[in-house]
Image (cartoon, rainbow, N blue to C red; front, top):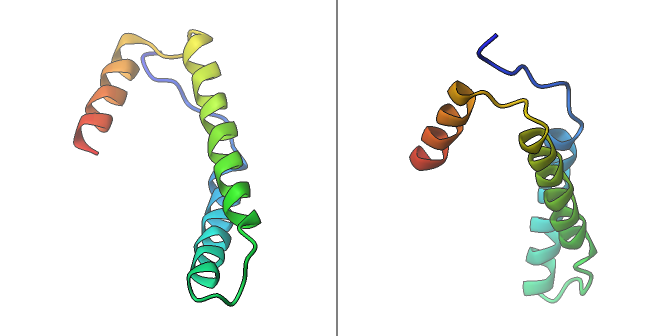
Length: 78
């Protein structure tokens, strides 16, 4: 098999809610309606945990040469 099929992950949906909460927290902080940036801290934490899983996957040898090239092209296009 030349491609690695990833398992289901809770991080995309959790991160989407965390980013929404973080954006609302920053908006509240800017308009002085709220002083709590805790949702933004949660978003940063989830981002770190999600990338930790991606790095573990890469180090675990799941990525073939074809997959590595696809990841590189995706990063370059992004």
